[in-house]
Length: 51
Image 1 (tube, helix red, strand yellow):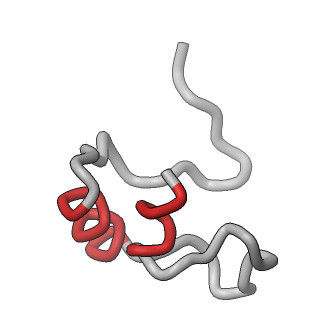
Image 2: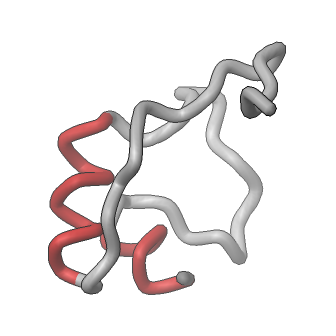
């Protein structure tokens, strides 16, 4: 999973940057490179996963 985030441009060993989450295109590219699937856009900070 760390490779996924690094590929998307975020190193999880560093504090979160104030720019927000990685853009969807970056997540898609990182997912393809690491054998992952992006199921949808990231949730906003006040959203929860539907039950």
